[in-house]
Image (cartoon, rainbow, N blue to C red; front, top):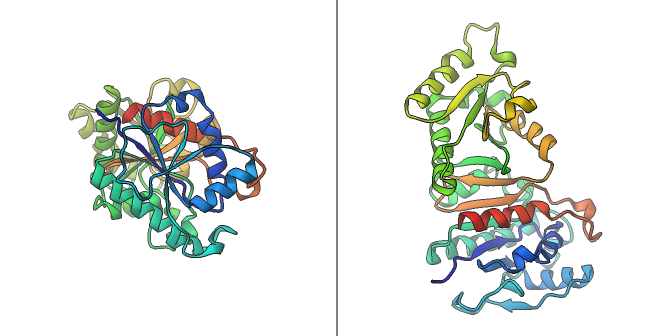
Length: 326
């Protein structure tokens, strides 16, 4: 039986991703990983970055092969080369890199479909230049590309705690209309299914309220009219969820011991405390797709490019997570 590969799309060419990728390959656990890691990016860029940062890895070029997985190991870089359409696409972050990134993602999505691959890791991508306001974020982009629109769920995962925002990269003034019983029910159901399938675990979920202290002076209270009824419905369905709780206290140490996942109403409500607690020791997992899409929880970090000082921990966690769930 051939072990399923882990696909990695390097993402934005002008970023620190290849640096942290080189560093991750030095880890003994990743070197000995049975799942072959297949990198999708420009060979030209890969070789230049390797030379600049003084890494020496041999490359197995899979671009013209039929992707025979039998003899692949992670002691070499298994590469599918994607050429730049514009040679200056990696000089800085700009819309010039968009066609190249799209080519890389299309190669990955095609392989996933043809080879029934279940894991895709992508490096950081500039939403501003790549998405160009067509999608809220990469979560929604992948949902559209895989005919999964409305099923996608963003989970920021750490083994001790994960968080999920109901709404993603949405301006605050627009989130209120997106908070519905149906949307919350589908998100929680997907999270519960994910933990049950991959970890054989009945996940414990705590839900934040929307308003400060779950209170409002308005006539309509989302916490009372939407959140409490949907929590009650989910509990009847056998899902271990509690709340809503005030968002300013749910992340206190004693409260955190009670939950595996904290489910919030909007992006910064849960991601700000998550990053305060764990820094970059977390990964972004998209649930609800035909495969698990994982991205390290860091950006392009342009100021660090070429300095060889970037921390690879988030990518290492992403690969380790991929191994557990493949």
